[in-house]
Amino acid sequence: MTIGNIQFNDLPVFLAPMEDVTDIGFRLLCKRFGASMVYTEFVSAEALVRSIKSTVAKLTIRDEERPVGIQIYGRDVEAMVEAARIVEQVHPDVIDLNFGCPVKKVAGKGAGAGMLRNIPLMLDITREVVKAVRVPVTVKTRLGWDKENLVITDLAEQLQDCGISALTIHGRTRSQMYTGEADWTLIGEVKRNPRIHIPVIGNGDITTPEQARQAFEWYGVDAIMVGRATFGRPWIFKEIRDYLDGRDPDPAMDFSWKLDILEEQLRINVERIDEYRGILHTRRHLAASPIFKGIPNFRQTRIAILRAEKMDELLSILEEVRQQLGKSS
Image (cartoon, rainbow, N blue to C red; front, top):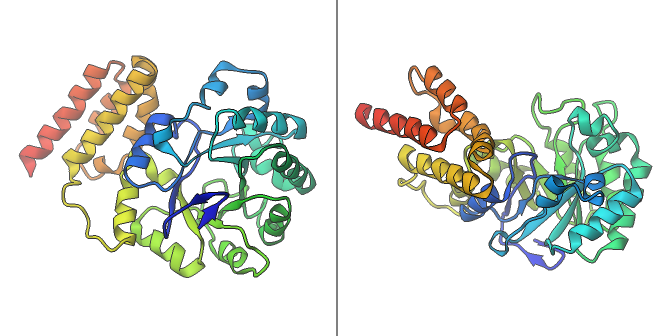
């Protein structure tokens, strides 16, 4: 599979762009464990045009995480075009247009998945951004606004006609948000359309290596994208990659090994930002990590983890968990 001039190996697995999740530290971990491509947190076009410091900071990328995409969102043609030109200056491998974010503060204002209620504007933005930059432009969107408006099969052709280099489809409507199950049948329908010649990337509910293989085998997608299942689990890419490539699970990836990775992520964030905000940035992953599930009487420890404000304190709590499990095993 190729996107622009980027050549991917068979069965590529991408890290989805997610706000407050896919910072550079997390992206580098996911890349280390086998992510075929990673994406930044999504970037507001209007904030970027206004040179808001926190937004501009999201454009920081490193060569060792390539190929990397920068995702932008907005509802104004001129702002999206200008933002794309600004993004192009930092040389991402792909500029991705976010027409899929369902949260109210984005979609409710007509951006993200809100574009699914204004397809002509979505197409205008896509067409003009493609014309404005030389970097490959891709799109991420959903099946439609709601179940009465499942527009993706026609929309995919229209977006392709605008000149995009790949299309990522999340198998839910905007109305579903992240509830219910992702419906991959329409993703497969888009992929089987003989008029579609750009890569189709499937997204939604990929949480296990087995589901990853099914997505490729049942729906024929060119790549898959993993989102929420990466929280506190950057090694999921190694688990999926090993399974897809026919390798047995790595016995070295035990609880202690995984805890080492989470502690490394904490140190990366503290060094990258500062102690307080670095801890805050890591809490989401610690709270969601599956490695703590099933530990007896863990509730109070979880509370302590989420209340810790000093790195030494947090590392001490995590090490206590390691020692307790070591004694019980």
